[in-house]
Amino acid sequence: MQTFNNLLNKHGRAPAVEHPEKNRFRFGNGQEELSEKVARIPVAIQGKVGIIDAAVIAGQAPLLLGRPTMEKLNVCLNFERQTMKLPQPAIETAMITNDAGQLLVDLMQFQPKSAQI
Image (cartoon, rainbow, N blue to C red):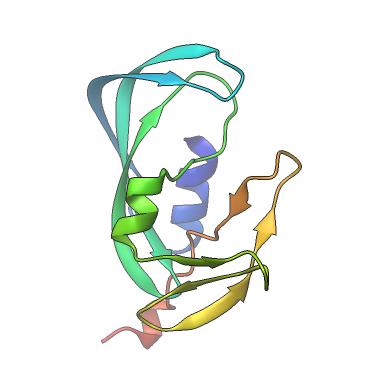
């Protein structure tokens, strides 16, 4: 969470706010983990600002957006062209993946404070 909060600070944003909430996760390798807290994280994707509630687990792990979240964002994935697109604004960007094959999305695409009205 410290890395996320450092990035938010760099963009002039308030830090994520954590609160107690239990969630159980099962990872692709079958391992399970219990999370005891959730962080409310301000994000911006292609300049569109929103909030993601994310369970916080111990250790190092990327913020994973599940299929329901991607559906709410109306993300369109085109595996043939290796692109992804959000409808508003309709900007198609190249898919970028990490070593584990997970899609990477820059969640810090905030407009500069001077550009906001």
